[in-house]
Image (tube, rainbow, N blue to C red; front, side, top):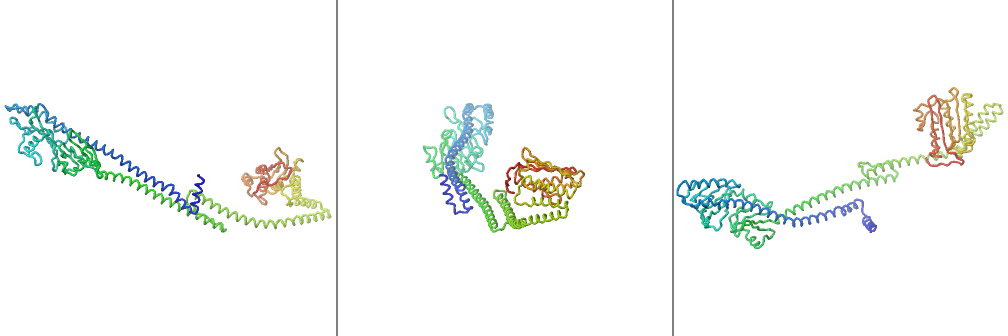
Length: 595
């Protein structure tokens, strides 16, 4: 299944460029799933909000109803306590015959009810009205209804008569004005239910209910406090306070909840809760507005998600443009290389994978240029080598014939010294110019170095003592050519052995446990540490063939690998010792590796 899907995707995107493939991949893997998940999550969140905010609304209505009921009961309890005080009822019902009894009653009232106005916040006035003709009116707490203005446009007599006519013992009245007020009236009755007075409480509306009624539910609804006669005592809309519910816009909603607690009509949720007997708290919540707020929250989340998706698309396109442009530049530079132009490079600005590829490309272009130049030089050197090989086939025979002619002429003339010298040269060049093979028997290598030593002895007679320490068993083993003669030559040229007192050169070839060990030791001028370091590094030192030792080391590695070793020990004015170790080879060794 996975392979089939891979083949299908490759087949469908085969004709698309890299940018198109990455854009499609981003859209299918990131953009479209994110949009679908975002829309689905937003829809589910909105549905969840709709399901949960009803619980929130009902809980808010319940808590608000409790607050309203608590506040109303607090002031009702204050008025009821005063209106049901037995001593107060007795004193208001009594007939007074002298002033002393009246003063005693006044003092009792002041002593018992003077602090009533400080029990709860918002009490603007507290009075006890009575109609007992034998009891005085002190103007403090004891009052008699008269033709005075009580509050607003209501005088005391009118208010007192209305309270007497009212079937309710306790009633609340809203008094509009610059400072909205509430008036609480509590009848004072004796044992035969006759009214002997009225408790009067004047309250500040804003302190009692204003902060609860103004902008409830964060401005998405309204609250109403309705008494037992279905008159609105308090409401968020103060213009309808004091009116009957039937005479307001709530009439239809009020009828819709008869026998039920709540109803939803035209996107408005209306609920009524009973408090304190027949009083009610009604709450009207604008569902459309709350849903709008919830929807705005969801839309905001969706909008932010879309914004960041678009931003991500923009950033992805920028990155893709950068990647595609850099790949195209690499392609153009590769075309230049294919056309033979190796002097090209790509500017590198980033440390990403493409940056690494650009660095590798620049290195490759430089190396290709060097390789092409090396190949060109190699072709030229090959032609030159072919010509030199042709010369090498001619020159050795010419040299041998010439030296043979000189040797016979020297013998004819009886010049033995010259004949010996020519014979040594003939032996030396016969071995040195033999180009048939780069390996030889140790016997022939020893013969070659002895021929060179004979020539130097003729040149510097009685100056250098040469000591030979050779194992006969190693003579028929194989070695590479010209590994001893250059070392002995260095003793004469660089070591200046012929200038030393008691000069000697010791040449040894011994069989060791690991192979064959060649040793050339002299007591020449030696080398200082700096020069020795240069020689060991293979750098050219001195005059002439300064690369001889490096050439020997490279040829040892070429034929014997790590088994072929050369070490050099030297001290200034103490001489030099060169040691060469190689495997004991009964058969001709072959080249192990190139270079």
